[in-house]
Image (cartoon, rainbow over all chains, first blue to last red; front, side, top):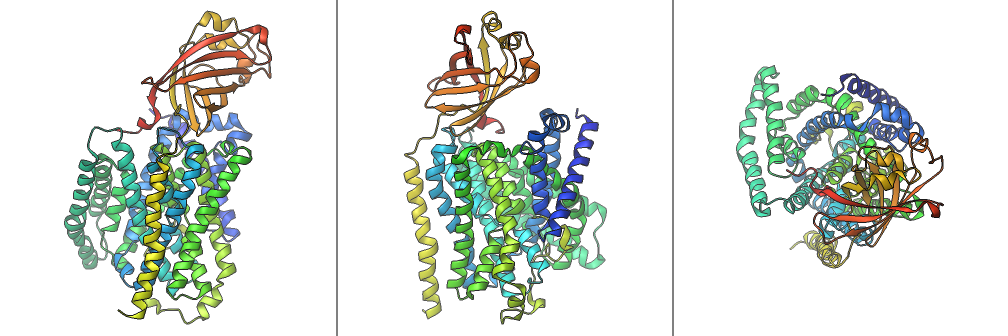
Length: 435
Length: 167
């Protein structure tokens, strides 16, 4: 049985610290989510555990963390559903060569650079229970991810959702996330099958069959939701409960198939109807409790697993610096080059590269999976969390520096706002959207 | 084929296809690399309680000679904590199959008679990589006290950490 007093106390402390630090970050022009990620680290062994170990041990005893983790994972399951909901496949088809080239390069460049870096890091930060292939593929997937929701949020804050930069960035980020999650699913299957008597092909076959059923079967049934919403202007509580049940069932199926809960919830979101008002309605129903309560718990749990003390000595900080450098050069550099070659003006291309370099919460989700399946070590996890923080933090100031709003608004690249069916998540209350 | 399409194909081949070919090469090359031996996980400690209690700072350990120790590994570096028994964390380095760790007893532990603040316990052990489950054997001694002698111990890994969340 959980110690309820301790659990409620933990939630209260986490919410207070996350809201406080988030507000401070808002004041310095950063998305709130960056502050909340930072707050999580402050509550962990990197600061609280180091400065006041007694307080830390009282507040977050290791026996209590299982309950905190369970709550935070429920939040991430719902969050991944919302991320999937925000992805509109029609949006991807609109931008032709520029989006195709940019999105594919923004995956391959960081992925391949991360694999090269793995040649150096694997003998230093891994162990022989992890194969090089799993290590390198995981590093590649973790470095090529883009925080689709925070990107949408930054664009919304700067009124750039209708611009060419905005629409191409959204399309590319969506491709990146879908690809990144597919690669991650493969890695999880690869690692789990090494310790599981079930054949890897049987697992992959099961996953493919599940995806086909979801895309060609369940998706058609889900259209009824949109029809009912159009007719009545709302959904009954029973229908909302059924939707949540479907999300959880899908999550359980993917967990049972040997990948992870989150893939199922993401897929369920991705196959939901995409009519803008309908999506907004669904997001409004799920978002508040997820973003204001459950996700801060995830940040805190991640922070409790992040120990910057493990990154000690010059050598370890060099590794950390290399990770940040490779992640930035691969993502920012690759996207910039590809979009510039596709005909985008240099500044705008650099702006797109900067946006694509945002990793935010999506990165933390992936890293936690990596640490759970032990494909990355605790020290590498801490370095990658620092990289996620750094690349997310740098987005807003660098974007303002190289691609000021006025240039984008004055330029000939703006498309009619009504043409854009951009992410519904971004069109929401800007302050609440997570990364 | 239009000029734009040709340029797109060239750019795609150079920026996407070529790196993927490179990735295959990197994965092939990486298979020849060796990473440090895995010691991550929970280990069951076995030591003689009588000999342990004769060691300065050893009485606390002797009260729980079959304690489990949790090793969290990051490449060659690792941290070691007692899953039960004394509260203390040690950090160490792995050199081939040899583990070296230095353990600073927590305040309550160092208060035991004959221990004293600032005293450290040194642990040197060798992992047997051919055993399944892996085992290690080594010596526990007190830093800066050659006359105190050392106590031998053995430990067996309870479960490889990679299987922790697997069904």
